[in-house]
Image (cartoon, rainbow over all chains, first blue to last red):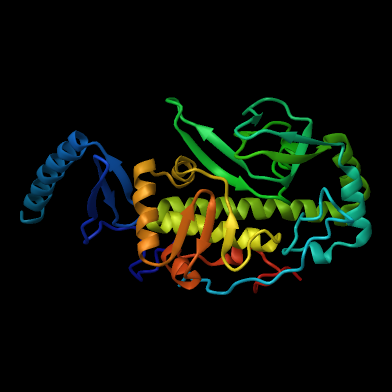
Length: 63
Length: 260
């Protein structure tokens, strides 16, 4: 287990994933090992949930 | 940095003397087998069978009394989820002892099926008992073969857990290229691989559309082409870099981890 303080343990990503479309699917690549394809509806709903969760997490960080 | 820019150079298989088992451990230990050990293994094959493409060979959980060494063609081990979606957990090439692990376990925890037409040498487990009891050095080679299988499984876990779509596909092709080079079936980064894009998707945990798009990206980056089952690696170092691929885990005779 890599927990030597060198910054290589699994941590929340600071870089956004790359998003693209192909043949009516939405593809999210990265960060890390993320590689997922979704229908447009699933991608849109996931996006809404991500934004809502990001706002809650941001509020938590800002006290 | 996991990066493996070196191509391999290995001896040609002696298929005239050992038509069934001549590729077993070729490029990773066969040169340490004696002629007697090679002969014992060759003569231990109980029968040879041919199977068509997309044929089910072994189902998960059923008792097995034979182990199969692949002579020609490609085979996959796989597991299906409750909805029937498939994950390939390994792809086997000529020279692989596909289910030698079924000898001590008596059953397999996965299915096995052919990808294209194949030719198999079958080894009755009673014959393998004789080898393990009478030929300990040959037994160690068989053990080594299953351990390199396990090393590949670990690498596949790494691939699926840490790499994105481009890395997963790149790694898959890098590994197949390295393994096929060892057994004389890949040359200069070119080899035949009778897999479809859905097969690649099942091996790499991606959708077929995602595979299609990623293959196009790899082609546009000048790294690899995959058309009609024909693979051509255009930039070996570049592909290995995308894949974070280092072939040490294959224990090649040309690598720095060659067993002493």
